[in-house]
Length: 468
Image (cartoon, rainbow, N blue to C red; front, top):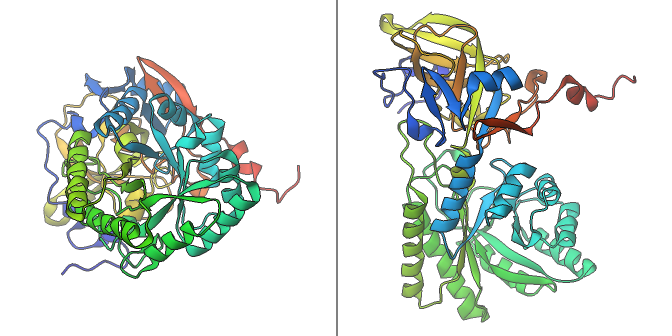
């Protein structure tokens, strides 16, 4: 069995040879289209998105920059809305949220899932309909709950007994009622990274079905004045391609749903099956289309409801990554290139760019895989194994672990990484006092700023150690 190297995966045996699924392309200039947003295209080696050549975008807005394809984002959002007709489709704001995105979602008829007071503030500023918001989180503060109730948030997903008491007290104090879903853990381990698998028993989210806490949570919600029980909520993880996990989870959650009806005499009107639908980051990934997901999940629920002899509740899902992930790429400028000799006489290029783990922590955090392409010119050089790395003072500051790029990549070139819409800007940091890049929207050959680039003034604004 392979074991982890104490200095990280990049030092482990075999790491220098690249993954087994990576194949050398016949043309390293070619775009692997299913990894990119739908308007992405190359002309004479120059990558354009939304009709905007990336070299032009960088000249206007600088690099690095996140590039958000409006047409692609909205098409994916509408595809989930239409495929899951009869469901409530909540966009998972934690993937990426800003006022522009919130307005698009509102206009296109989706609902919105938030999991912090900050995300709720963005929704409020965007004028998002509060009755179409679900509020997640395993440790919501008293202030967050008060704000959610005051604003009339449509549903709060409760995650602990303490929160049920806290929310009941807030609702009673402020008056009215609050819709509630009880988050449960179904005991299903999704086939994903340990840190993003969320339905097994030994983790921080939800009430255990097997341990009896979930049923007790339902009882407490029913006994709490001001709380209106809507149903159960389950989420098994993220970046999931195997629907068997959803099948097992749905069976267990629906069994509890039926038990609540039989033992407590309450027919809950709703059920939320969460999200976690995967996207294609590299050629090894083969995600399902929304229509396939809708058909498969609907068949699972219909079958289980028939077997239990219960009415089917109204269903909700929470796609986030599956909408915004492919809709955004990140463009970088190359600063240095180093050639490193590998075992067996092979060589790899270390392509250093002007961003890194401050704008995409997922490679270091989750061992995530990404692809990349030369975005500013065509090359006649043969493909060469490359590793795209950042500028931070960390050996693990790697953006793309393994990719074939043209062998003549040089300083000043632009390199673009697809699939960076989910959790890259959301998890971006100021590590090494880096300035977070802007998010630049593109559509019909024009650019517009969604989030501006941070400045040194922004960085120093919170540093009050020296008075001016």
